[in-house]
Length: 115
Image 1 (cartoon, rainbow, N blue to C red):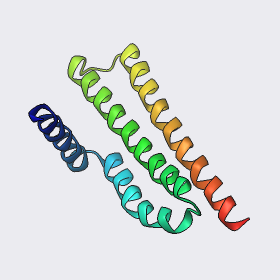
Image 2 (image 1 turned 135 degrees about the horizontal axis):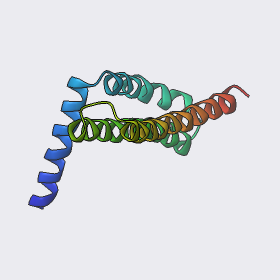
Image 3 (image 1 turned 30 degrees about the vertical axis):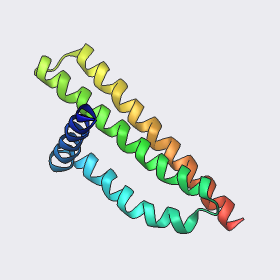
Image 4 (image 1 turned 120 degrees about the horizontal axis):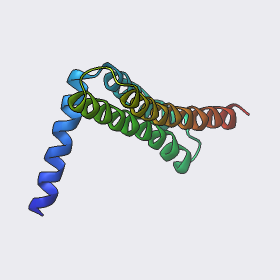
């Protein structure tokens, strides 16, 4: 049980640090805060609501992983380097794809609700 508590505290520190230092994380946290109540109203069923919220959480998770990769790259190689740039671009592409998934889920929910 102590290991779970420690893991939670580590995660909490990461969440707080990301929220304090990263603009993209703050923007996506704001989307989550605004999106949860909208998802509860927009979703016609429990599973649609879950998908809407989960898509926002996935997007935020990808942003945290992207941020972690960028910080590690900057720590290991602070100067501009073409191969490090490729690593950062790949991480950014992952974030973009998570955002695309969220957009697809939200658009589908809107179409279902309106249609």
